[in-house]
Image (cartoon, rainbow, N blue to C red; front, side):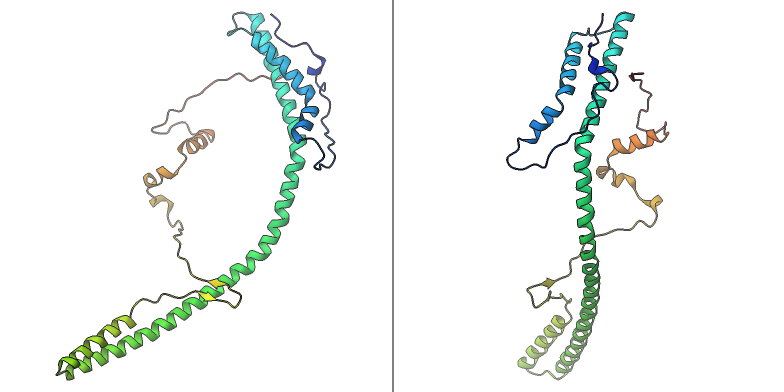
Length: 251
């Protein structure tokens, strides 16, 4: 049973070298898919013929002749796929490289701007911390002064009015000692700089990390796959087994 498609296009080099020469596109040109359809017509014709042959193939190989025919058909399909990938890269790689060139160009601009922004943020944070410490020291001094004043008034209090003055002074002392909440730094162009707290981390000892707490946030299948690909063969909770598949190549 011969399942192979007889076509000179399947011979090595039969598709020819893929060198798309698309002119610069403008609004008067047909859609890109139309140009791709035209440029890949030969590949798609061969593909359709191979798929038709596959549709006629039996569900299983019961003899040597059928197995040979299936091997040839699989090889021709793989060859068609290989040439499809070659055509894909001929079309896509120039666009991808253009995208990379654009990334590199704008990344340089980003870097030239991010560097002074980061430096200014560091300087502003340093000033904000020093300013906050200064205000805190002033508040602590004022709170201590008011507390001492309240104690002096308490010792001299004789009337209800004097007692109320003591209570009011104590309240002012507590308010003066309240935490400092820094207001935004406002520039003259409508710009505002403010602090924002964010949780960060640094690993100090990886051996002490309880991995069970990280499991919900980990891609276990990917981690196990890396373990197996690097030679791991024994892992509790995982069945590691050797599978077998057919590889087809044309000589």
